[in-house]
Image 1 (tube, rainbow, N blue to C red):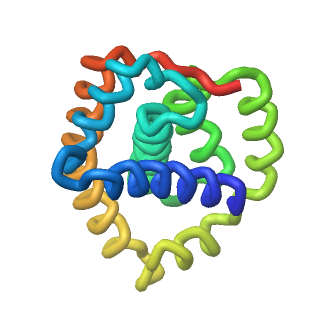
Image 2: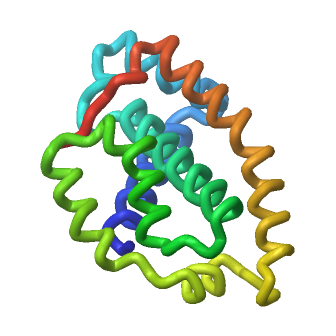
Length: 161
C-alpha cells in the first residue's frame, strides 16, 4: 500500500503546488484544467490534470470498495478489492499497472485487520456500515461532478502504462 499512498501523495502535492503559484486565479480545479488544456499540457504525465484524474479514479475505487464492503461484510477482502478494481480501475490501466495490481492483491489484509484499520468499533460492524453509507452518499455526487468537469476538458479517457 506504500506505493499507492506515495502516488496519491504526489498527485495531491502536484495540485497543491500549482494552486500555491497563484491561489486567487487557481482557487478551483477547473481553472487548473483550463490552463493546462490551453497550454496543451493536460495529458502530460506530470500534469495536474492527470493528477486530478487519477486521484478521482482512486477515490472512485475506494468508495466502490467501501460500498461493496458495506453490502458484503463477510466476503473476503481480496475478492472485494478485485471486484472493485475490475470495474473502476482496470479499464484505465495498461498491462504494467494491471500486473502490478495482481502483485498488490496478494498483500490485501484480511477482513478483521482492514475493518480495525478503518475504525470498526463493534463486532457486528453496524456502526461501520452506517459510516460507510454516509460517506458514500456524500462522496458519490462529488465524484460525479469531478467526472463531469474532467469530461468537459477531454480528460475522461486517460490510461496508465
